[in-house]
Length: 122
Image 1: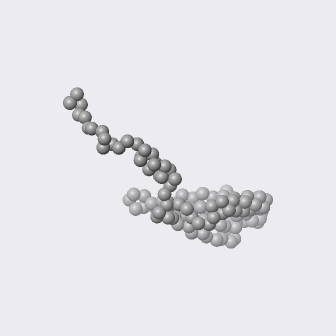
Image 2: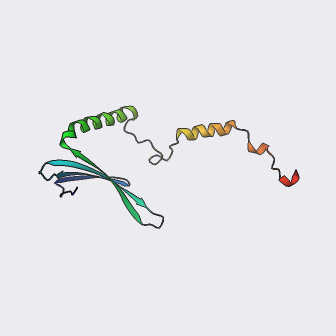
Image 3: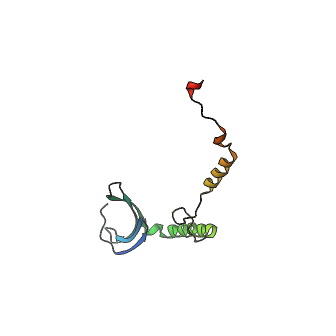
């Protein structure tokens, strides 16, 4: 599908990700929206490439899409608030399983109570 020039565009830069919101025209000159996520990946040698994912959203789906998006975003904000909770955004963030692992390690016998045995000694 060949895409025509954008009619109206907005860009959202979010860390390594960039979101492009574009209004485009069909051959019949009706409008639809594309939402493109572009994510930058850096290689070991310093070069980089982008991975892109695109969603095509047509007018007949706008109402249902908007309703579900609103429901999903409200759910997240109502259950977790607006504060970002992640290892990347908070230096003092500890994953739950990391705390559980520490507790398990404390319950295990200390390795200092074991003696190294060389098979030549047997």
